[in-house]
Length: 369
Ligand code: OGA
Ligand code: NI
Image (tube, rainbow, N blue to C red; front, side, top):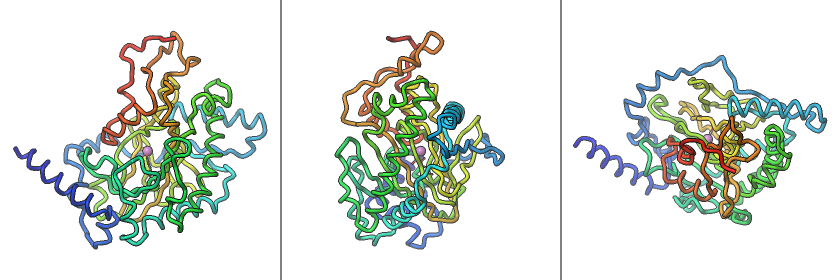
């Protein structure tokens, strides 16, 4: 009985929060010094927390792209990328050649959007994930047990031509467009490095798998939190994409689950955090790892981060399955065929912290041709 009334109250609180259209930032701006109940993690979840330690003496691999045009250097980078992607599913990229002003302006542009006048920003508020540009809170607000302490502005290009740059407010449009242009070039490089690491033609992931035909850019804004130990800024999840390229400011809070420990992704100025998403894990037949990660809430803020997800063309009818070169008697095919749209729909219908790619796992890993 108690549970039912709890649930009822929660829905009411969630609805009021949604209808206010002012996000988590709105709560903080109202002067509230407490965390509303819908953001508070249940006791059972918090007590389990102690079973997973946070460690300070480990760091995800940091890979420099300096000298990548030299063949020997490139071979070495490929090895590092493969190692990081198999073992960690995460790495940081430095010396990527993208001017730091482009990164600075992107983070500023992200912040400016979230700090628009409330009435102007409300117009962008939407729960429709298929809008080219929208501002929102927790896409899984009505499905999840606990809400995340963050607001998000999404810029979506689900298939070529979907996104209309003029939908971005003028004050941050150029910054975001310059960033997108550069990040698409960096994705080409990363896809080549990963293809080579997998023993495939350098163009394989881009041309055959069409990994960068569609993308999704999310601008997170994590307001300061009065009681960070009670909630999370982003709950534990893996990314429903081929690949994620993340730019974060210097505050920190992102953690990666590695050998059952939370490892901090320490911010490095001008670095990108790159991680393998669920789809790349699936088509690599589990060779590359889509790793769980989360963001802890913080007393200080706002923390700003921008994640660029390579999601492929969502309108394509192409069937995806583990790449045949990566399927063998020793490594039988581990996943069923799927379209990117099916996968995405399954993801959207589940809370962020419930993984989707396991739904496509073949039970007995039969070899298919
Ligand atoms: C994400 C994510 C991490 C961050 O958007 O999927 O994991 O640091 N973001 O904001
Ligand atoms: Ni993520």
